[in-house]
Image 1: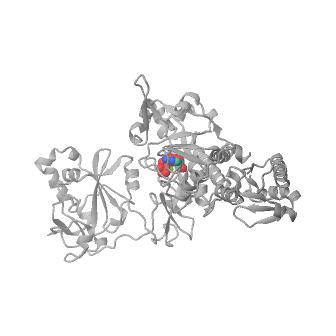
Image 2 (image 1 turned 30 degrees about the horizontal axis):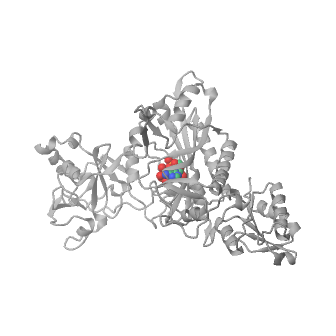
Image 3 (image 1 turned 180 degrees about the vertical axis):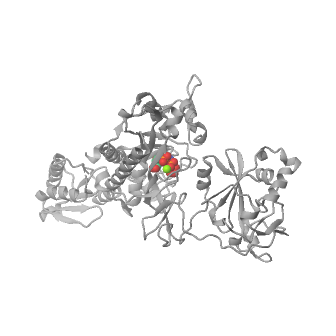
Length: 592
Ligand code: ATP
Ligand code: MG
């Protein structure tokens, strides 16, 4: 490609709304342009890089035996109602109406479509296992689209779905996809590592996210350098000790705490109750019902864990009014001591309150199990209880690990201190089980003649997010540093004099033709511009290799070979093609 014939609108400055390095560079290097918030056009150079990522994904999916398909982005809402996600995924679903006033949904992912397809096309164990994938545009009504392609409203995702006859077979498939993901990210030049991820409503241990470490990432990852433990903070646990037990004995003692509404205030004079001796009482609304969550005063609740336990994605903190209706007291004085909750339920005004038809469930954090001598709210504004023995005084419905891990806590596997860092989620592998196959009727006739639901898995890669993650991980003050595998062009030839009949341009044209003949993706910067401008642009766009050709060096019998991230190498003109081909070979990860 000749530079003058394509469109590479580089910018000196990034628009003000670009906050992170990769977003700025995507714009400055002329790869994408914003049409609206979270909606982008890929310009020619950006599209070339995107196609390269897509091709790597495609090759590895094919290698793993997955079958490429293409499913519609425009989907009827009925299948979403059937799976139950019309409600639960409602906040990200784009919905629209056609001219006949019929509603449609724009695909944020495609479990519903693939399962419906499998329901009609897969009927026997003889057709299994099968894994299908597609690389296609997805739509999500993100509350806060930001960081360019990282969190967009419209983006490209590779989504794959596996169908198996048994749990064991599904696990084999899961591991195959897991390996394919490791290969994909390595081939994209990305340092991505797998972490245990929240399995939410499904449960089980087969869910991993592939994370790219980055300060600008929206996820927090808990990891141990001494062993292999790594988990999304939403899922992470630690080996932190339980609350120390005290002598059981003293009965509950109510005391006045006027004006004290926080853990911190209660920990100060005149009460001086250490945060780790307090029970924090939180009220959430899950699927429109209140639930009570107990956690130690010095711990933070992990909302993803409680949502997973309850099995809902619709979870929110209760409002002060809802709390008062359910508990009879305001935040700051809440507690779950059985006698106080019972008296609330007996209260004739509250007895009929909608929220109290069933007593709210009480979920408590494992760290509180067996704790006594604790302090908690008395469920009466301005009062607390001392001497709370949790198992004696509170009717906990169920105990779970509910707290958020903090850095330095002992690793759950090896006891060494845990670390936390930020990361970008580029991919997710997930064993779904029979959630969708049961709801959407994807069953097969097993060898024993029984009809059973398929065991499914789903596997996503944010293709456009991966492309941007490559840039976020690999750049310097001058611009992008593309790995060869996904660079829009591998080589940029920069003649410093573009007079058509001159020796410089003639050599440039020859090297260009020779490299192209070797299958190298090459661009020739034939613009009649100052060398400084051309060099700057090639650094900004970040082509892995530049060949500078000028009269001065040519007089010495040399051209200048400049790897983007390395030092200049003077090379004889007739050796340059060979050297470039070797450089490309050396920088391509093994296995491809
Ligand atoms: P996130 O937690 O970042 O919102 P998610 O868990 O909702 O992502 P999945 O449903 O697992 O995402 O989708 C698979 C992949 O699609 C993700 O790993 C991510 O790389 C990508 N992805 C998800 N949402 C977006 C988005 N709004 N813009 C770009 N890529 C996205
Ligand atoms: Mg995810």
